[in-house]
Every structure is written in structure tokens, then in C-alpha cells.
Image (cartoon, rainbow, N blue to C red; front, side, top):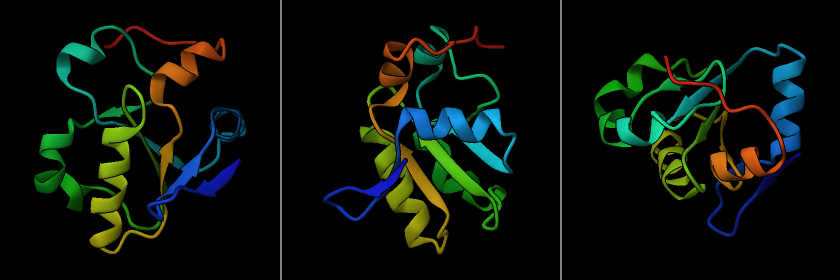
Length: 113
């Protein structure tokens, strides 16, 4: 479910995230993809916060809530995790494989609002 990658970034796999979302755990889900990418679909309940806006909106994210970042494949969301960890957020996780892994697992991708 949880792990750490070779760069020291905490990660969660698709099954782990799905389980936490199903259990209605206190969890923030943040999509750091661009507007164009989000138009193709999102994980339901995610907050859309493009990576380039994270530095100016980071203080709006609650340090006490476990936060999972995702993007298309996991690279940009890993950057988001590293940035937030450097700002003192301990409870940040990268979704391994991003929304691609989510969709390939057969889980629902919702239309963007």
C-alpha cells in the first residue's frame, strides 16, 4: 500500500488509494495535471491544482491531512510531493503510476467538472 521510492518520496499504490477512498478516510486527493489533461477525466473527488500553481497555493493545503498527489504517470506528482515535504508537510504521498495506473486497474475515471 505505502512505500518510499528511490528519491525518498512516499508513495501509495492504486489498490491502497482505492481502499482509503472507499473507507472515506480523511484524505485530500490533488490532481497536478494541466487543464487540457484534466479534460480527459479525473479521479472522483480530486482537487485540481496544476503543478505550476502549487508554489502559490501550497499554504491552502492542510498539513494535518494525508494528501495524495497524482498526475498522468507519477513524475510531476512526485515533484509536488518533494516540494510539499520541503515546506514541512509530512503526510504527502505520490500515486504510483498516476491516473494511467488507476485507469489500467479498471477503476473509474470521472468527467471533469
